[in-house]
Length: 106
Image 1 (tube, rainbow, N blue to C red):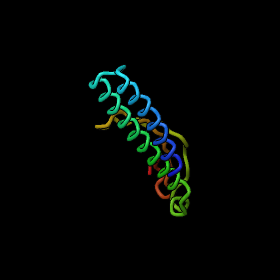
Image 2 (image 1 turned 120 degrees about the vertical axis):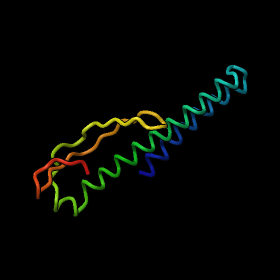
Image 3 (image 1 turned 180 degrees about the horizontal axis):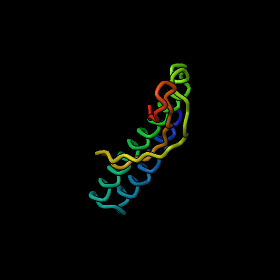
Image 4 (image 1 turned 180 degrees about the vertical axis):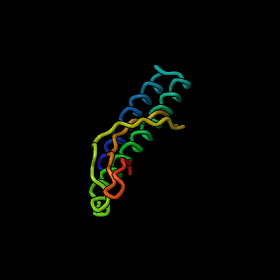
């Protein structure tokens, strides 16, 4: 997960540096520059959140506790959330409880 986050950060830093050069060279006004920085920051935050949620899903899927109590029903189920930092889409796993037979997302 750390390598993935590091890659996301490096990609956004590269884009921010390009935008910074445009601003310094006069190709962008301060308002456009500020909006671009804000969007890049939010994009990074959204991507880190998605990476974290999908890593947590994988950790649950691989856990001994989960294996004892739940069976994987469906992998990679799409989920979308609207958060203050914007909309995110991620994949999660649906399980069936061995005890109750009900479907759950852990």
